[in-house]
Length: 446
Image 1: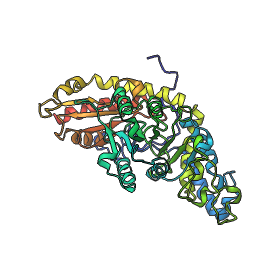
Image 2 (image 1 turned 90 degrees about the vertical axis):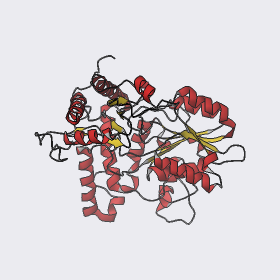
Image 3 (image 1 turned 135 degrees about the vertical axis):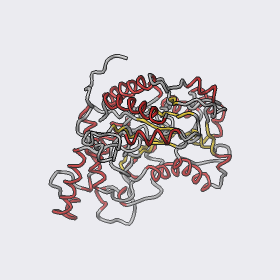
Image 4 (image 1 turned 30 degrees about the vertical axis):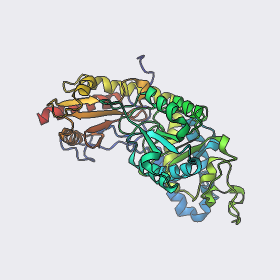
């Protein structure tokens, strides 16, 4: 890999990192130093920019009250606050501005899009997804299927990894689309799989789904702000995402929705709300709904301005560093660095050996492997570490030790720790410390 032209320290120095004292890292005597935060795949860090903008909006609320909807000292009237956000978000996902709406929550947006695009018939009624999709998606799929009087056991078609493997092969996904295409109404995968960190071949899957006459949508919760995308050019029908992971919008921050412009005339909002009404007449309170053309017509209620301000601060920083090109370049360097260091560990077990042990988790092998694809084109920032023996409880012990050392990743039961060196604020030093303290954690357990 060619040397990165990006800063050694971080892509942006605007982000606020907790200290070891803040998180009670008991095994780190340097309490005032920053923790090693590799959990942006679960919750991104706050930025000074976001903090400033939120404080500004609190002050506008205090000094302008309801007038702030139309008269704003910083030129951000609340009725138009999402204008800049939609423009920036469209750049992040590779869409046109009118194809994107900053609104709602991820699963709520998923239901809105599935209600519009999942239209099963007697012949074409299945939803194709990856096995062990994020639980909220699984719940949504099942409830949508049931709402149409169908049985999830037959209407939801899950693609599983081959025996002894942890990620899906592209050829297996494409083969099942080709084979089952006439019966598939909707292909709906995660852009980046939350558990394994696998980045699915989105363009190829979308193209194959279209060839078979299927609608193709994506859950981009772990993809947005992580990997580059071109939703419009790829002809993706719809997509949904949250913004509190790689987009650093705040816990439970506002979400996003995309719908290709080709659907503007035929997919009108079924569950109308006044914030989706044309702004020019919205406050005249007309009795008949006149939706904004495109994705923004799906808006229902006025969004929380404090949540919008927090997201705006982060997206402005993305814009300042050059958006997803530099972010991806930096991410490739960080993830490769962390992987290289982990492979040097005396406790690392090659995945090929784990496959041989797969049916025999009690073989006595102690250590960890990486189940995220080693090919950089098949992953984002996340590396998922599987701890061995499988089911032994080793992961929980290592996770607790890492936390005591001030290394914050996240655990996924029963055996995985996810570490994600995030391009916007993580450093090479973070990768080095994560590998160093993982080794110490193993040594301390014995």
